[in-house]
Image (tube, rainbow, N blue to C red; front, side):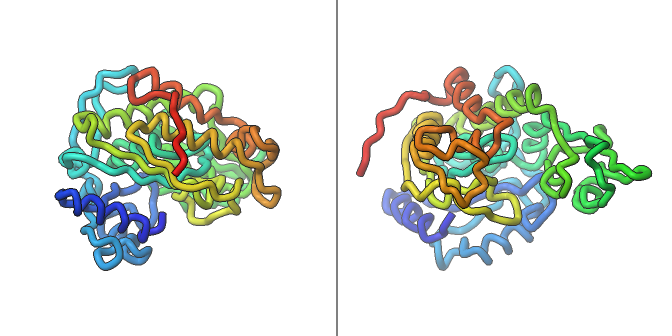
Length: 313
């Protein structure tokens, strides 16, 4: 996300008489956004400081991700969800999301940004808990990269193979990304639909109490196959499309999804197949995941509607 774009929204919010601040929550995985000090430093180094966006940055779950509010939702997987305290306390939100692919969600847009972006580390863990990685021993080369990257010490080399202790694992997925031989896997058929439902319920909780006071903007620019949380970037899978806005996160993500798929896929990208216009580009990048499950479930629980009218400006 370009901070210059954020500045335009900040100015409009300020002109309407509100007091805007930009925000995020700390990550579950290790890295430069795992605590508020490193997080603020990283944000400033990427241009998200007052001189650029003209709004203060608040890490909503505090120094060590311990500041959270319980929001009652009473849905299938959660009776309540954990939301960063300052996000829960805010009167309204403008949710700005980069639309892109994702290894376990298929794609990430407004719904996933709400769910993960508004939850403290404990809330992120609750969402990821359904995706428990395991080692495929015949593929393991005992390189130890999973051991090095695991933030909680759940991975260990036992003889000539790596092992993951399920009682310690927080399901952050870093080991899957780091494994050079693709020896770490999850139960795609059973775990992923439940994971996407948990994500969608957290999105529901993030905006509960802010009905009719949330706006959403999706940026369909540099649409990469991977989530922005990985420490690299790949070539976009389709050409740039534009910027979409709505008051309905489900409709917005559905329209974004459709517009991406209507494009002809870029041959130089990581698309394995589905390059033709109209084919599912996210399935072409991540064939084991049906990302539309978050849209179906979002409509089912009342987060929004998959029906939309596209108005071009």
